[in-house]
Image (tube, rainbow, N blue to C red; front, side, top):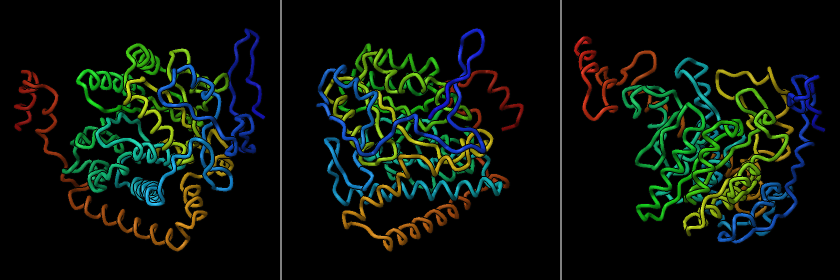
Length: 413
């Protein structure tokens, strides 16, 4: 069971994780189960009719890999195979990019290992014209929208083809043509931005939805609460996703309030529709995203979704998780692995097998490797060519101010 938080004489508490390095992983206090069907309300229901779902766990795939319950989106085998393809592609891409960082070929990276369903399923459930305001670890949204892998890699290399011209850390992607807003390293800023974008889209009479993602730790920041207030007050057509992967950079979810209530429950006080979903269940994430999108598109307002998942790898290449959690914790996660669960579901349906999975893995691995060779042909982090020096003075001001003109003259460019 989760240990009691430590208490000092003054009476305040310091939340403690259920297990420290060297101890046995323990998730029993979370009460997670894949086998309890949850009622699905109509998307046009009053927000208060969803509030009991903030303390439930919406799932579709049970422990036997069968789809069950009212939330089953009844996806075709073709769509399920595409979902597996996108998740596996994301995972293999991440693996390659981590190796490149360890070899000194890129400066920084963040994997989405264990969380692939959160982004990939949502990306497939939304329309291409819907606007995305991601955090990091949502690279699966790009693959769901068929983003060119070479373009993603040239950004991480910061070479001459980087569409951000070397101005962002690797993995802080942007893709205007794909309705994918620039990732911000200042966590949480994208939440109120997403609400504002949704309000502007509604004011223009557009039939689009906006979606944004933050981690559990970011719910303790003011931007999160400002976004919830705006979304509730103006009934913006926005989906606010909280990815509860159990760990912020190195602090567990209890530091952001996860011991006292679910993160979905934070939306109740704002009068938002609230859903809590098994984030490692591709079908369930697809279903709740489609439900929230249908609700927003029909003019019934925003939805806050908590995705219960687990960050199976380090926070980033600058992090060592063995310093703050048990090494075997990822294997002990009770909701399993999203790729393996969807794979097992397809096999149970007779729509997949180990040989096809191995062939897909091999084909995607070759695609990732070939894409990197192409990306590297445009320049490397060490040797260039990089973006032209004059580009550092561009894209910020409509009319370049005098001090930038002077700096550019001083450089002789």
